Image (cartoon, rainbow, N blue to C red; front, side, top):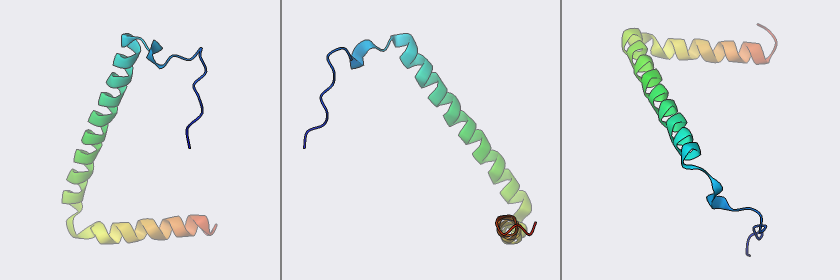
Length: 71
């Protein structure tokens, strides 16, 4: 089943190089931000050590209490 035809006035190659570079820059910034957040969370995980399961359980309990309007 073929897709919809592209109208003649739409040209996919009309993006400027500047626009593509801006999109690429945003993607790189998001990537770096995710790497930093991952490192910070890894540091907290190392500091918490054996308390991680209890912290997860407390978070689940808080979410359930919030969803059931008992918080």
